[in-house]
Amino acid sequence: MPAVLSRRTLIAGAATLPLLARPGLVRAADTDLSTLRDMTVRAGPIDAAERAARLARAQGLMRANGIGAVLIEPGSSLVYFTGVRWGRSERLTAAVLPVEGPPCIVTPFFEEPSVRETLGVPAEVRVSQEDQDPLAVVAGYLRDRKLAAGAVGIEETARFFAFDGLARALPEAKLVSANPVVRGCRMVKTPAEIALMQMATDVTMAAYRFVFPRVEAGMTGPDIAALMNAATRALGGSPEFSLVLVGEASAYPHGSKQVHRVGEGQVVLMDCGCTVQGYQSDVSRTWVHGTASKAQRTVWEQVAQAQQLAFATAKVGLAAGQVDDAVRRFYAKLGYGPDYKLPGLSHRTGHGIGMDGHEPVNLVRGEATPLAPGMCFSDEPGLYLPGKFGVRLEDCFYMTEAGPRWFSQPPHDLDQPLGGHRLPPANAPR
Image (cartoon, rainbow, N blue to C red):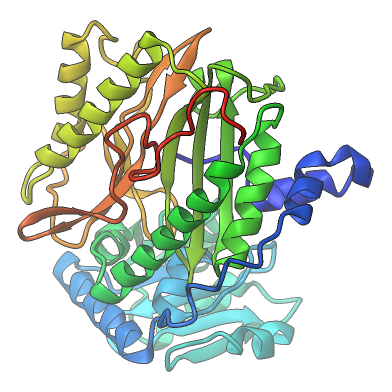
């Protein structure tokens, strides 16, 4: 699940407060992290051969779909195809992938040296001056390559001004969705990508193992999140999000503005992820501080069963939406819902994951895309009881010819909420 509290949000918000008003950051800073070691030192970056294979696959999909070129703005797709890491602004920087030959990077003249620093593929670079329309530069490239009269794909996250500007500068072109090309490449992960996602997951699980025994009565969600982020960084990951919901806040998938503190019998729900070499993890764990009630145990066990059901349902060739259907049928038999109603499961069973925390496609009702080897998903069929508590167990898996495989092993027992780590007895010192 996406998290409200990201590393950037935490740091930016904390920067506006006096030091003593930041107990979570202070607690994290005071924690001894010396036992943690960087786990990512052997993580291999995506190399030139892998990027060349991506471009070749994209060009094959362009030919198959009658698309002569694809326009991509900064973001994960730009990194995926070219290696260029750049932010979006009112000044256009973009890549044009032609159906044949190397890509072209269009960027402001004064930005060219900086853009080249991360360029990871052979490419032509064309620049725009401050008094020029950068989309006219794109149009000029397409005309030079004799691609102006055909279909030009626009990557789905490109902003309207890029689409509209190209339509004005190149009226003879037909602008279409680039999804058959970009999604066609990015939805199917290679072994190198899966290895980086595995490393990111291993870091997150190691951070969980460090944080879990250090959660104490009186701590707030931000206290725990700051500790999780500190551990993740020490282990070599880049924290992407750390959402920690305590007590009633756990009944709302993305939390509440109310401050809740850990106490006896309170649910603690953590949803955390990091990146390693640009690839993400996403793992949720839920436990009860102290003694769990019968209702809490029952709901936890129901979620664990639903998570395993989703995993068992995922088969190569099955429509992705049918995984969600199976979970909802199971919950309806238990009296939840129906459908997305509460108490029950108010969000999809899972989302695609890779370079972005949420990528196409999702495990959601009506999604007809068939599951294929290399696709990666979260599996998180939580249950939420408004006014009471919620439980979410989330682990990601990737599809193989033989079926799904976990990136992290789900827990099977509330008393071992991380999987293999038993809760301390009630009233024991923590």
